[in-house]
Length: 159
Ligand code: FE
Image (cartoon, rainbow, N blue to C red; front, side):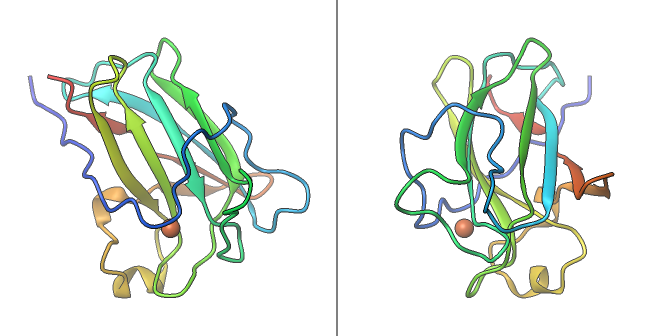
């Protein structure tokens, strides 16, 4: 059987905070940014869904600002039986030197391996001048009734 390409890792960056709350809705009142609904699955290299994988997301708001005091736009969740995750958030903004991106750490169900990576938004000129950007970390983004919806499947090496 053909193996899926593993999702590549990228740098963690300076703004990760441990102990994020468990939640799937990061968007909240007063947080600038266009609505974004991100969904997808966590899979192994054979395409089998990984239940109980842990995803820990953190990102800037629509103005490119992180909450480094509290936990706004920071949260973790576990995948369900079909390896699915759902994140209600906002489209991140650019900040100095960086094209818009969503950070995430994906930990295998057995807790032994963690992939640290970033997801990117297609079609932005700033992608071309960001040294961390990669085509294979692009979300698939479409217009939704309110804001945007996006998908991305993570492929973890759990062998
Ligand atoms: Fe960042």
